[in-house]
Length: 273
Figure 1 (cartoon, one colour):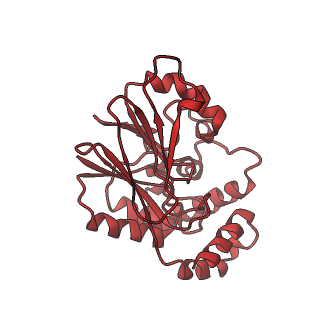
Figure 2: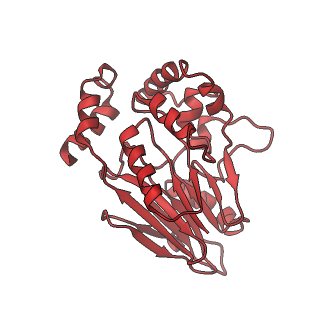
Figure 3: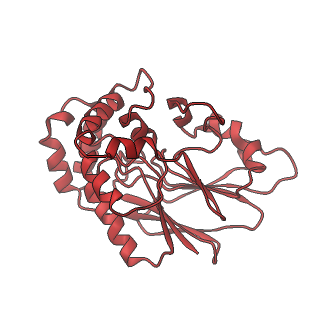
């Protein structure tokens, strides 16, 4: 089976179109969305409508749930709060959109993998409400805290997005309690497809990167991932999409003028175009 994953669209319709075109050119069996359909860019209504029309299995991203009003953000995330508020206004004009976002599942389990927006080890326990704390980032501390649970986790493959940096984390089989130094990180720097062959007894955490940005590794491309369980490979794709039109639209949009995150985003688009 060939499973295709993408997420972190964040209102970027141009990048989403690129990803959909790639789907039509690639032999795949199933397609999944890793969440964050909306957020950041002030065009969440566009990407929501386009993605909903595809009827894909989709997990909830933190931006999706923030826009739906399920919890509050970290107090220091002023840019993100403003982006959430703006997109909540946009989506309130789309019938059923807020209900759809609020009802997205936190994870989806399949035979060969589990997928979630960030981490299966940071989801709320049964009966507990989801909070923004479930969507922190996979830094060294968070990974170290998850190693023992990852080693004994029922699924040998985890697929997620959220961090906006495409990578494949490999946890080799060890006879001792795993350490941070045991983890092998496979990163793709070039635009060409990046293939990693999966080892039988290792565990893998696939970070698909971001379709729509902001691009935290400074490479403005549409990112996605393909898991092939017959060949036991993962391929990370980095797909160029037209940047100039998006840059012009953002530069002329009043919402983007005073948000440092989006100003940096526009600078990257302009430099990369």
